[in-house]
Length: 309
Ligand SMILES: [Zn+2]
Image 1 (spheres, rainbow, N blue to C red):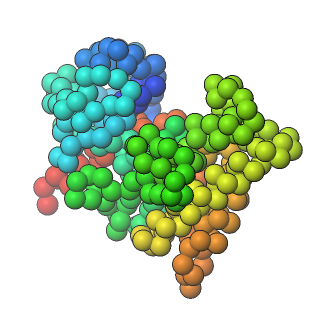
Image 2 (cartoon, rainbow, N blue to C red):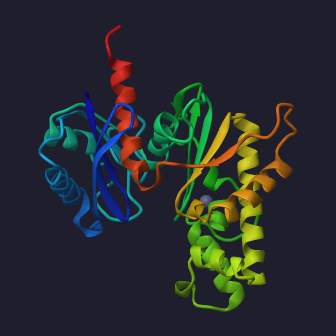
């Protein structure tokens, strides 16, 4: 059995795992990211995680990397991390190859997650998959005809920065009214805190969903607004891509039906009429392991593409 090492370099946590080519996870370990330690610190932390795996596991044949930030078009170097210094133009693939002496594949976290859900999760069995993560930010990855679509500059799938409300709330990208500025976890929390006159630190998206469930009309209003506009963003992407399925992951998706029912309704109301019926919008299934399994999916695809014959 061939196994693969998946490394997930996230902004708040690092994870390393071993899985086989079917996405069966044999081991996974996590630790918090020390942003100040930069890339070298993160690689050392990954080595420690891997060293803590049971000795009985088969040696991985290749290494995949999911990186929480933009990477260059060749997927060899990281361009920057929003969470800490030192990642500008850093040769992460080369460094990881020096440590583990195996072939290495890398992509940004949204693309890796999209491929992970496509190969091993909720997108399995489909050919065209739009994966969207609704979390601290809103990212997306696009699988077209069974392959990750990266665009001309590696910037495909920026559903989070499509504008759905001109002059709306300010987005971390500097523009106003992006989907991310309205429906990411922190944006939902901020909208509620502003309306309720509470300090933003006192509120999380999770608590807004809880308040709505308990009958708080203001919380219900904020969620109707945020999910409605997220639905417009997804409907626009669906109209453009005509995917078989939309897979939604990320922390906010844990709200379950409180998110998915109004989201499906908003998408249906804003999509072009399609004869075969609505595009299914389903929850991601890989959970916290999506980064590691996405990284494994990347390196499995690369090994398959470079295999002779
Ligand atoms: Zn934006």
